[in-house]
Image (cartoon, rainbow, N blue to C red):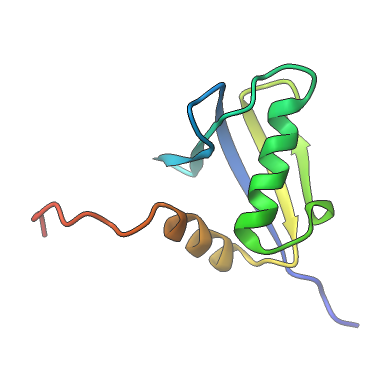
Length: 102
């Protein structure tokens, strides 16, 4: 029996932003700005679509596990392991700027 990879992710959401994208990490929590408003589940829908596209998984593989009406959400994505998910998030930021600090 093969085991399906599954990654969990804790997000701090800021809905109503100019564009959807990650804005950094605070401890183990990724900060995600979402362009959709926090009305009628629109922000949750945008989060699912964004993470599905980011990971190359179908939207059905992305589930909000907790925090449906809260800015703090736990999301589970099937078909992706934690390392692959972290890499996809980091790559979504674009090239890292060299701050000159070692």
